[in-house]
Image (cartoon, rainbow, N blue to C red):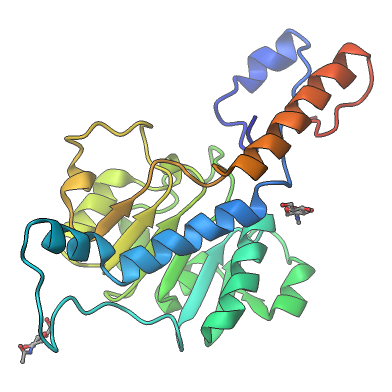
Length: 245
Ligand SMILES: *[C@@H]1O[C@H](CO)[C@@H](O)[C@H](O)[C@H]1NC(C)=O
Ligand SMILES: *[C@@H]1O[C@H](CO)[C@@H](O)[C@H](O)[C@H]1NC(C)=O
């Protein structure tokens, strides 16, 4: 009951002739909502603000807890799939100046969305928000490593709604700690669940939620129905509703 299949041993599935299906195409809007939620929370320093309130140290002042704007920014999407497209559709209302994306091929949808395809290096260099939406594969493992983080702006916010292993978390910890980037908003981490003494959790500029992307009643019901249909169709010897070939 997921889109990603990185938790499946594909070689074993193939070897034993097991039919494999996923539940693609129904979680895009729900995940996009969460991606934008953690994007705003990280950019506007919600974690520090909430901690200040809870510890009775609500801070006032013209220079207190200053965050980053979305209006006028450049938003870079790594992997402009259905979730990335849903994010761009939403952010159209936020007066973003420029949408960039990177991926293996031109996305026809990018034209109407007004997103420009660039190299990963250019995207990292020019984006105020770097949104990670690519599938996790051996090629994307630690795609965001120390070198990639060093290319980003000091004021940049990294958002991951794809898979934790796309980011080298030790490098991310260092970059956030040393304020080489501004903040991170993460819906996915490695491992899940993240132990409560994990260094990332201690950082005020790292806003983490526990993989809530598709967790709404409506979306989970849609996913469950597809999963059930996949099983019933496969048992009948028919193609699944969402097969993985
Ligand atoms: C996005 O999700 C909706 C349902 O929430 C679905 O109808 C639509 O086909 C999906 N779009 C894509 C491009 O997957
Ligand atoms: C306001 O904050 C900025 C950035 O942290 C700092 O450089 C500046 O000195 C501060 N100004 C005042 C008046 O406190």
